[in-house]
Image (tube, rainbow, N blue to C red; front, side, top):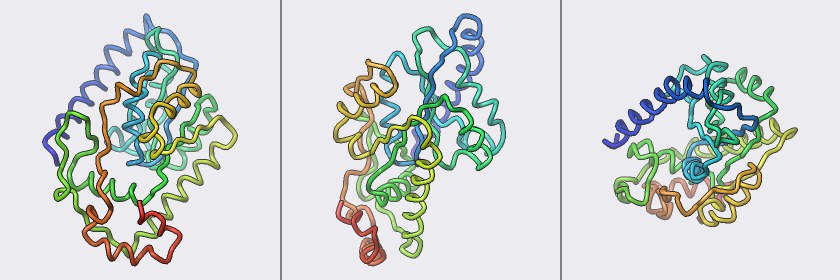
Amino acid sequence: MNIKEPILHLRDSLNESYENTILRGYFGLFGHPVANRFAIVGNARTGSNFLLDGLKTSSCIKMYHEIFAEHHREKGKDFEKILSVLYQKHDKSISIVGVKLFYNHLTEDEWQKFLSHKDFKIIHLTRQNRLRTIVSLEVAFKTGQWTKSNKSVAAGPVDKRITLDPSNLVQRLAKLEADEKLAREQFKDRPILEVVYEELVSQPISTFQRIGEYLGVSDIDPGKIKLTRQNPESLERIILNYDDVFRALSNTSYSRYLSS
Protein backbone atom coordinates (compact mmCIF):
# COMPACT_ATOMS: atom_id res chain seq x y z
CA MET A 1 0.00 0.00 0.00
CA ASN A 2 1.18 3.51 -0.82
CA ILE A 3 2.50 5.19 2.38
CA LYS A 4 0.04 8.03 1.86
CA GLU A 5 -2.99 5.74 2.12
CA PRO A 6 -2.76 5.02 5.89
CA ILE A 7 -2.28 8.73 6.49
CA LEU A 8 -5.34 9.58 4.40
CA HIS A 9 -7.44 6.93 6.17
CA LEU A 10 -6.30 8.30 9.55
CA ARG A 11 -7.20 11.82 8.47
CA ASP A 12 -10.63 10.67 7.29
CA SER A 13 -11.20 8.83 10.58
CA LEU A 14 -10.24 11.90 12.61
CA ASN A 15 -12.46 14.11 10.47
CA GLU A 16 -15.34 11.66 10.87
CA SER A 17 -14.82 11.51 14.64
CA TYR A 18 -14.74 15.30 14.82
CA GLU A 19 -17.95 15.59 12.79
CA ASN A 20 -19.75 12.88 14.76
CA THR A 21 -18.93 14.33 18.17
CA ILE A 22 -18.05 18.01 18.40
CA LEU A 23 -19.77 19.31 15.25
CA ARG A 24 -22.84 17.14 15.64
CA GLY A 25 -23.31 18.36 19.17
CA TYR A 26 -22.77 21.98 18.14
CA PHE A 27 -25.16 21.88 15.20
CA GLY A 28 -27.67 19.98 17.31
CA LEU A 29 -27.91 23.15 19.38
CA PHE A 30 -27.21 25.90 16.86
CA GLY A 31 -27.67 24.35 13.41
CA HIS A 32 -30.75 24.19 11.22
CA PRO A 33 -32.64 21.27 9.65
CA VAL A 34 -31.89 20.64 5.97
CA ALA A 35 -34.84 19.58 3.84
CA ASN A 36 -32.99 18.44 0.72
CA ARG A 37 -30.86 15.30 0.27
CA PHE A 38 -29.22 13.41 -2.57
CA ALA A 39 -27.14 10.28 -3.12
CA ILE A 40 -24.43 9.57 -5.67
CA VAL A 41 -25.19 5.99 -6.64
CA GLY A 42 -22.80 3.92 -8.70
CA ASN A 43 -19.76 1.71 -8.72
CA ALA A 44 -16.18 2.24 -7.63
CA ARG A 45 -13.77 3.72 -10.18
CA THR A 46 -16.36 5.67 -12.13
CA GLY A 47 -15.17 9.15 -11.16
CA SER A 48 -16.98 9.48 -7.84
CA ASN A 49 -14.01 11.12 -6.11
CA PHE A 50 -13.71 13.65 -8.95
CA LEU A 51 -17.43 14.34 -8.65
CA LEU A 52 -17.19 14.78 -4.87
CA ASP A 53 -14.21 17.10 -5.26
CA GLY A 54 -16.33 19.33 -7.47
CA LEU A 55 -19.41 19.25 -5.25
CA LYS A 56 -17.34 20.18 -2.21
CA THR A 57 -16.48 23.53 -3.84
CA SER A 58 -20.07 24.62 -3.18
CA SER A 59 -20.74 26.35 0.13
CA CYS A 60 -24.33 25.07 -0.01
CA ILE A 61 -23.56 21.32 -0.17
CA LYS A 62 -22.53 19.08 2.70
CA MET A 63 -21.03 15.89 1.27
CA TYR A 64 -20.54 12.66 3.19
CA HIS A 65 -18.15 10.13 1.71
CA GLU A 66 -18.60 6.33 1.87
CA ILE A 67 -20.22 6.25 5.31
CA PHE A 68 -22.05 2.99 4.54
CA ALA A 69 -18.94 1.19 3.23
CA GLU A 70 -17.43 -1.80 5.01
CA HIS A 71 -14.34 0.15 6.07
CA HIS A 72 -16.66 2.27 8.23
CA ARG A 73 -18.99 -0.41 9.63
CA GLU A 74 -19.89 -4.08 9.50
CA LYS A 75 -22.13 -4.51 6.47
CA GLY A 76 -25.73 -4.97 7.50
CA LYS A 77 -25.36 -3.18 10.83
CA ASP A 78 -26.12 0.36 12.07
CA PHE A 79 -27.98 1.38 8.91
CA GLU A 80 -30.50 3.61 10.68
CA LYS A 81 -27.82 5.17 12.88
CA ILE A 82 -25.66 6.06 9.89
CA LEU A 83 -28.64 7.26 7.87
CA SER A 84 -29.56 9.63 10.71
CA VAL A 85 -26.34 11.55 10.03
CA LEU A 86 -27.88 12.72 6.76
CA TYR A 87 -30.90 14.07 8.65
CA GLN A 88 -29.06 15.88 11.42
CA LYS A 89 -28.88 19.65 11.64
CA HIS A 90 -26.12 21.43 9.75
CA ASP A 91 -24.60 24.86 9.35
CA LYS A 92 -27.05 27.50 8.17
CA SER A 93 -25.18 27.82 4.86
CA ILE A 94 -26.07 24.23 3.89
CA SER A 95 -29.13 23.76 1.66
CA ILE A 96 -28.60 20.14 0.59
CA VAL A 97 -26.85 17.08 2.07
CA GLY A 98 -25.30 14.37 -0.08
CA VAL A 99 -23.75 10.94 0.33
CA LYS A 100 -21.77 8.55 -1.88
CA LEU A 101 -23.50 5.17 -2.06
CA PHE A 102 -22.04 2.33 -4.11
CA TYR A 103 -24.15 -0.62 -5.25
CA ASN A 104 -22.31 -2.96 -2.86
CA HIS A 105 -22.45 -0.73 0.22
CA LEU A 106 -25.88 -1.98 1.30
CA THR A 107 -27.47 -5.38 1.77
CA GLU A 108 -30.68 -6.12 -0.17
CA ASP A 109 -32.69 -5.40 2.97
CA GLU A 110 -30.89 -2.09 3.50
CA TRP A 111 -31.51 -1.08 -0.10
CA GLN A 112 -35.23 -1.58 0.48
CA LYS A 113 -35.02 0.62 3.56
CA PHE A 114 -33.12 3.29 1.65
CA LEU A 115 -35.62 3.19 -1.22
CA SER A 116 -38.40 3.97 1.24
CA HIS A 117 -36.83 7.40 1.78
CA LYS A 118 -38.32 9.20 -1.20
CA ASP A 119 -36.74 12.55 -0.37
CA PHE A 120 -33.36 11.64 -1.86
CA LYS A 121 -32.54 12.90 -5.32
CA ILE A 122 -30.31 10.46 -7.17
CA ILE A 123 -27.18 11.13 -9.21
CA HIS A 124 -26.49 7.88 -11.08
CA LEU A 125 -22.80 7.83 -11.96
CA THR A 126 -21.63 5.39 -14.62
CA ARG A 127 -18.71 4.85 -16.96
CA GLN A 128 -19.22 4.10 -20.65
CA ASN A 129 -16.10 1.95 -20.83
CA ARG A 130 -16.76 -0.67 -18.18
CA LEU A 131 -13.47 -2.42 -18.95
CA ARG A 132 -11.72 0.76 -17.82
CA THR A 133 -13.69 0.53 -14.56
CA ILE A 134 -12.28 -2.95 -13.93
CA VAL A 135 -8.76 -1.93 -14.94
CA SER A 136 -8.85 1.13 -12.68
CA LEU A 137 -10.02 -1.01 -9.77
CA GLU A 138 -7.23 -3.56 -10.26
CA VAL A 139 -4.62 -0.80 -10.57
CA ALA A 140 -5.86 0.84 -7.36
CA PHE A 141 -5.65 -2.48 -5.48
CA LYS A 142 -2.12 -3.05 -6.78
CA THR A 143 -0.71 0.42 -6.13
CA GLY A 144 -2.80 1.40 -3.10
CA GLN A 145 -3.45 4.72 -4.82
CA TRP A 146 -7.16 5.53 -5.08
CA THR A 147 -6.93 9.20 -6.04
CA LYS A 148 -4.48 11.48 -7.79
CA SER A 149 -4.31 15.23 -7.35
CA ASN A 150 -2.56 17.69 -9.61
CA LYS A 151 0.14 17.99 -6.93
CA SER A 152 0.68 14.30 -6.16
CA VAL A 153 3.20 11.90 -7.61
CA ALA A 154 1.36 8.98 -9.20
CA ALA A 155 2.63 5.48 -9.85
CA GLY A 156 4.35 5.24 -13.22
CA PRO A 157 3.12 3.07 -16.10
CA VAL A 158 5.36 0.14 -15.09
CA ASP A 159 4.03 0.17 -11.50
CA LYS A 160 0.45 0.08 -12.76
CA ARG A 161 0.70 -2.83 -15.19
CA ILE A 162 -1.80 -5.54 -14.24
CA THR A 163 -2.98 -8.95 -15.37
CA LEU A 164 -6.68 -9.65 -15.85
CA ASP A 165 -8.29 -13.07 -15.70
CA PRO A 166 -9.85 -13.49 -19.16
CA SER A 167 -11.99 -16.43 -18.00
CA ASN A 168 -14.28 -14.25 -15.84
CA LEU A 169 -13.98 -10.92 -17.62
CA VAL A 170 -17.26 -11.19 -19.52
CA GLN A 171 -19.05 -12.07 -16.27
CA ARG A 172 -17.52 -9.07 -14.50
CA LEU A 173 -18.57 -6.73 -17.28
CA ALA A 174 -22.05 -8.22 -17.32
CA LYS A 175 -22.32 -7.69 -13.56
CA LEU A 176 -21.48 -4.00 -13.91
CA GLU A 177 -24.09 -3.68 -16.64
CA ALA A 178 -26.71 -5.50 -14.56
CA ASP A 179 -26.04 -3.34 -11.50
CA GLU A 180 -26.57 -0.18 -13.53
CA LYS A 181 -29.82 -1.53 -14.97
CA LEU A 182 -31.08 -2.50 -11.50
CA ALA A 183 -30.31 0.97 -10.12
CA ARG A 184 -32.30 2.63 -12.90
CA GLU A 185 -35.20 0.30 -12.22
CA GLN A 186 -35.09 0.94 -8.46
CA PHE A 187 -35.12 4.73 -8.84
CA LYS A 188 -37.46 5.05 -11.82
CA ASP A 189 -40.20 6.66 -9.69
CA ARG A 190 -38.10 9.58 -8.43
CA PRO A 191 -35.77 12.29 -9.74
CA ILE A 192 -32.60 10.72 -11.17
CA LEU A 193 -29.79 12.43 -13.05
CA GLU A 194 -27.53 10.27 -15.20
CA VAL A 195 -23.89 11.41 -15.13
CA VAL A 196 -21.29 9.67 -17.28
CA TYR A 197 -17.62 9.62 -16.25
CA GLU A 198 -16.33 10.39 -19.73
CA GLU A 199 -18.42 13.58 -19.94
CA LEU A 200 -17.61 14.54 -16.35
CA VAL A 201 -13.86 14.62 -16.96
CA SER A 202 -13.88 15.91 -20.54
CA GLN A 203 -16.63 18.54 -20.11
CA PRO A 204 -16.53 19.44 -16.40
CA ILE A 205 -17.96 22.95 -16.73
CA SER A 206 -21.14 21.99 -18.59
CA THR A 207 -21.57 18.75 -16.63
CA PHE A 208 -21.27 20.41 -13.23
CA GLN A 209 -23.61 23.16 -14.41
CA ARG A 210 -26.18 20.47 -15.19
CA ILE A 211 -25.58 18.87 -11.79
CA GLY A 212 -25.87 22.22 -10.01
CA GLU A 213 -29.19 22.96 -11.69
CA TYR A 214 -30.47 19.53 -10.67
CA LEU A 215 -29.43 20.04 -7.04
CA GLY A 216 -30.54 23.66 -6.89
CA VAL A 217 -27.11 25.17 -6.22
CA SER A 218 -25.22 27.70 -8.31
CA ASP A 219 -21.74 27.95 -6.82
CA ILE A 220 -20.01 24.72 -7.89
CA ASP A 221 -16.59 25.65 -9.28
CA PRO A 222 -14.94 22.91 -11.40
CA GLY A 223 -11.85 25.12 -11.63
CA LYS A 224 -11.09 24.30 -8.00
CA ILE A 225 -11.04 20.52 -8.51
CA LYS A 226 -7.67 19.11 -7.47
CA LEU A 227 -8.06 15.53 -8.66
CA THR A 228 -6.89 14.39 -12.08
CA ARG A 229 -7.28 11.25 -14.15
CA GLN A 230 -5.15 8.40 -12.81
CA ASN A 231 -4.86 6.00 -15.73
CA PRO A 232 -4.75 7.85 -19.06
CA GLU A 233 -2.49 5.24 -20.68
CA SER A 234 -3.78 2.92 -23.39
CA LEU A 235 -5.18 -0.43 -22.32
CA GLU A 236 -2.37 -2.17 -24.19
CA ARG A 237 0.13 -0.38 -22.00
CA ILE A 238 -1.59 -1.15 -18.69
CA ILE A 239 -2.81 -4.73 -19.23
CA LEU A 240 0.10 -7.17 -19.32
CA ASN A 241 -1.94 -9.93 -20.95
CA TYR A 242 -3.79 -7.62 -23.33
CA ASP A 243 -3.76 -10.22 -26.14
CA ASP A 244 -5.64 -12.67 -23.89
CA VAL A 245 -8.13 -9.97 -22.94
CA PHE A 246 -8.57 -9.04 -26.60
CA ARG A 247 -9.36 -12.63 -27.54
CA ALA A 248 -11.80 -12.99 -24.63
CA LEU A 249 -13.80 -9.92 -25.66
CA SER A 250 -13.33 -9.70 -29.44
CA ASN A 251 -16.45 -11.71 -30.32
CA THR A 252 -18.69 -10.24 -27.61
CA SER A 253 -20.76 -7.12 -27.21
CA TYR A 254 -17.97 -5.77 -25.00
CA SER A 255 -15.38 -5.63 -27.78
CA ARG A 256 -16.12 -1.89 -28.16
CA TYR A 257 -14.28 -1.27 -24.88
CA LEU A 258 -10.98 -2.39 -26.42
CA SER A 259 -10.66 0.64 -28.69
CA SER A 260 -10.69 3.32 -25.99
